[in-house]
Length: 115
Length: 136
Image 1: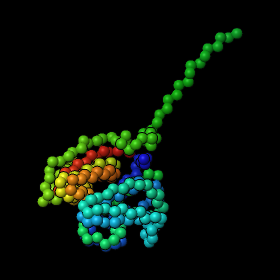
Image 2 (image 1 turned 60 degrees about the horizontal axis):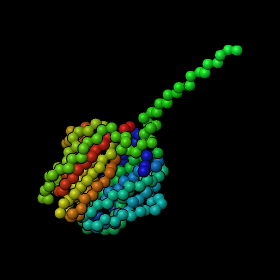
Image 3 (image 1 turned 60 degrees about the vertical axis):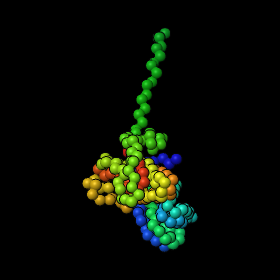
Image 4 (image 1 turned 30 degrees about the vertical axis):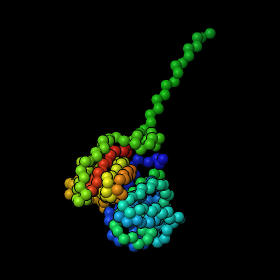
């Protein structure tokens, strides 16, 4: 279980409703974050089945860093995932669509620096 | 020969600061205030923006929230809305939970609120929230 340090505010990044998004569309983006170890929580879902990709992006937001795990959601369901991620200064976390989707989808990322 | 009187055992007081202790505790033990979960009985499948939960104005601080959404016998969606101090505008884009028929979804999130901000849940199902303020 993550041990939270006092005083670190939580970054909240969300997109309530994307209609008929295309593959690689950004559904949530934390923006550049200070370097550190983060508690990351992701909530995704929609009215249609959707594949989601969690991207750790470099400081220039020009390329992915490391592996890009995926989440899949069935129609009219949401999935929640929590994990720990080490970020270098100005890196960010995004959630993007893994494919074209016909429907309305929603995504949320929260990020809280642990160390 | 002089009598030797044992000196009293040394007394030492150790004071642990809150911050030093907090790192040993899980987040819920750092809770300073908690609200009981409010599970609304409001349900309206035709009015998806119905407010089914209102936390009321909160003091500034970090919170852990447990959000539960249920669509009952039909598919539904529930949105978590962070509102400003005057409850006149959303502070951030809303987050949504989609639930298939006969399912419930629960998530735990953390958020930092400014003074008098609040959370609403709007949706077309049942929903509830516990909002625990954490020590800082």
